[in-house]
Picture 1 (cartoon, rainbow, N blue to C red):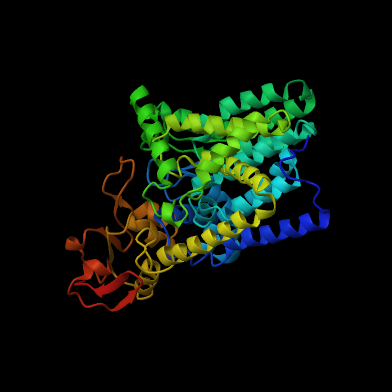
Picture 2: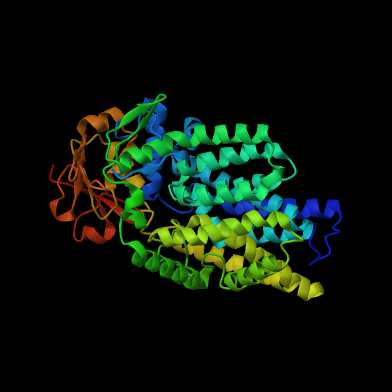
Length: 513
């Protein structure tokens, strides 16, 4: 049954025009200038991108694992799905910030479409448009879509799974694409293992008699086949077992399981769970975790705007009080509750808690929808206010992440590495002012994975975040120990050194050889 908070008898042509306009806006916000905004490259982007290129060109990641189901990466692992999705883009466009960011940006665009379709199905065309408007301009969604952090693939996958689960009430074979989404989600981010068991149990109970044997059995088989390799990999690492081959893929052995380091699985018990919930509360209230790539702060939009949390509270009240009139909303309500409860298990920041934000956006949009119903002909006022907030957010985003001075994306480092590499140095040095500098040398020089494996010298080979002392002709360490034909320093470190060239925040200085 369609909700009647607003009149849903929108002319089909008008609805289509509004949807296309909002999708065009949302796509532009996620795709325009993607290769240069943010300006530079984050170490996690460089890691996912280089390993994708290495798998494409050699069949193995930088640690020598052939077709790994989980990237060994820094030692404690990195989720592999983004790197595999990037393979065709890298094959066509080459290894660059654009090619590694495109899969994430396109996933963000796809999430807009699925979000709109789900909202339209639950409460009708008017709410569908409201939800699409809110998510299209949502700061968290824009930020998450524009940088290649592999874990941020999880929310679009879970959103698609929720949509197909709801659709399965009427079309039983919709369980199959839902199973694919759920089966792939642990390859996007390991926190999916916290979410999936209770949610899948809910889905089975909620669908109840509407489940049909054939689609259910086929979907269960597909889900099981997809989730088995990553489950075995995580289990083997929990037991401390060595790397193993499985159906042509590698189940790598990590130096430390990432879930142990970032969740209550690493110890702490109820006290740690309470601390994690307090962290969630602080993030919700402040709309920030102190990391600029996740949030520009409450003044500049935060996660879902300063007014997003009150709207979400209003939307949750509306959902709970009218669930009988919108029964397809139950999976989203369950997803919200399970994601919020899972936060107790996670040492939280915005990207680690990312399974929560799309459900929160949904209920904030529902609160906005209720507000539109109350304001009636004055509904244009909050829309105008939202667009003004968007303009202010975009100005802050471009100002903080669009050029030099952006410490999290190391602007100018890539150009400095290319400058040095073109001169075929006997030895080149990058200081540890850069987080994991070796991965940028690998990325921008496209060093073959075999050469890295053969020549790498780790400072702490068993560490959760291994530091590289050297590989090939590249050296890494403190500015005080810098030695080589060329030195790449942050401009703040250069002091009185003569600079051959400066790009962004980084300079190339002549070394002592």
